[in-house]
Length: 263
Image (cartoon, rainbow, N blue to C red; front, side, top):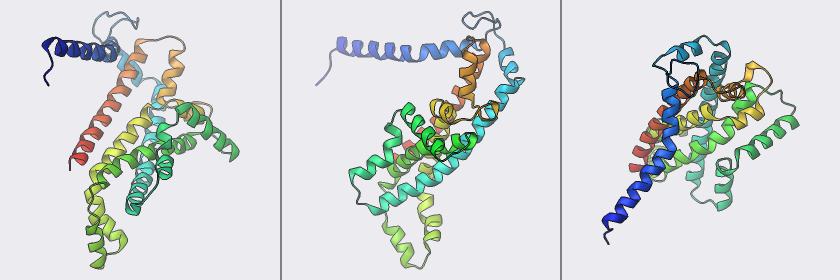
């Protein structure tokens, strides 16, 4: 069945309008981050001074360091646990919908609900809030994303080679290091990049589980605190940098994941 030229034109027009609605505001934000003037909504000539201003802002640099620490540590823990969880679930091969729901619940539960639940949990354990509680909170929801990416690769994994390795006398650790890991490594890296991206961008859970003061303030929290006093070109520049880092990591993750699914 072929579509009429008018129908194709209409669909293309809708597609263009949707993409324009999604990306024109982002393009405007990026463009205004290079504006010379102090008004965040008016173009007045090209300049990099707002990016230079960020480099000398102690509060922003501290928040950037906190964000990097949280993202790297939570990504490392979530990648390790998520990979082991994916392998354990797929090796079992027989699992019900209840187990699936438990694994992927953090991906489905609204952020505000998960944030309140984690805050209540930390309060019940009498944890002092800080970077460590943000890291633990990020591990909770990142773990599910890593697990889902790695499981996509394991769906086509030939488990007979693991059995063959064991029959030849290799230990479980050796089999994992020399047989299983090389095969699933692209998926593990893709999951780690996705977890890193989510951790860098995350605000609600970090806001609820962070301690008081600059010591546990992340970049999204810093942007929120700055924007309450009005939008400035400096905020545009900071948002552009965060977006660039996120898009780069997400693009790498998607490319690796595409290769994983295609194998």
